[in-house]
Image (cartoon, rainbow, N blue to C red; front, side):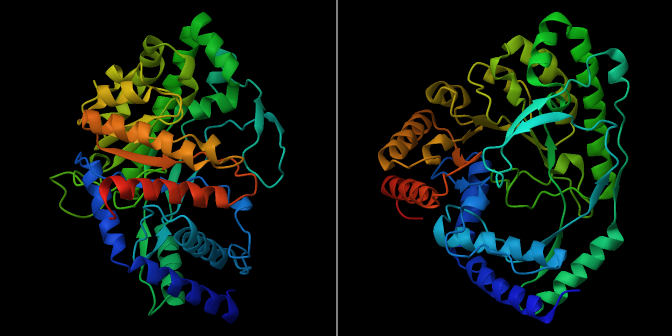
Length: 415
């Protein structure tokens, strides 16, 4: 039930989006991201992601007017990307088409999250959680089920046709699949809480092995079903907040048709393992994750957890390509260990935009990374993410982007 007014609004937004997407600068951004992911060191791609959008609308640019759910989703897509291009573009890559996501449904694993929460800002989805332990016993673990995962290609085609009709003559449309995002420990703690898991690693390791074993089964089934359903993607410009385009994918023997597991990235992490020893990290995460990693084309590992004392473990994985360097990791140690063989996925500290932004602190943090990576020949990227708040000061992000861009321009020349 998309109205004529909604249709015209979407077409106008699409025209604005298309103007940005057709700018020759987009191809330069694409080339830089592909080169960096292909281990060619140079000017780093810079992204800002996981933005607190509820705090960003200072003049109505982000206010949604469409009522129809399908139209509203398209409107949000266009408004956010146009806003970012105006105010903090970084190296955000805009494709010259509108992506229609392939539908993927899951019956779930037989558990629901039980928790208590505290929110300081009712508009913010970043809140405090206290999770109830639902996997305390062996009997509880037996409740975990392998989900049934299905697609809906007929509805995909209807959605594609509708988007195509709405944007006809302005912007092409294209079906887009999914990445492989595997973070079992992010899920497990939502059914147990962090303290229970950490205590059991020391006191009941066999119980933890049963739990991660179940989640590994689920992960293996999931990526197999994605391949069977033909919903995998390797052409999306981002892979969970990071540039994802690379020369190595799809695999050399790909001859067209649905993508296979070996044609795509797998993105993984174990964020709650920040205080876990390397030996335990290997035992309870990497020994299990490796079964999934070996089936995929390339691996990107790490998020908020510091990995500077665990990089030697990650380097044993043959298809490892990108490793996260969080704000709590040693910048120099990571650069020295990664060298020119891996992408150094640097995550600047989001606390620097949370209240107010100091350009000198931004520049200091940036130059520490630049100098370490240049010293050790690292291809590197900068992705400011996990931004839970900017204290309703959008200009914090604007200033961060301007400071980083001008500093890199001085070092590398204008792109």
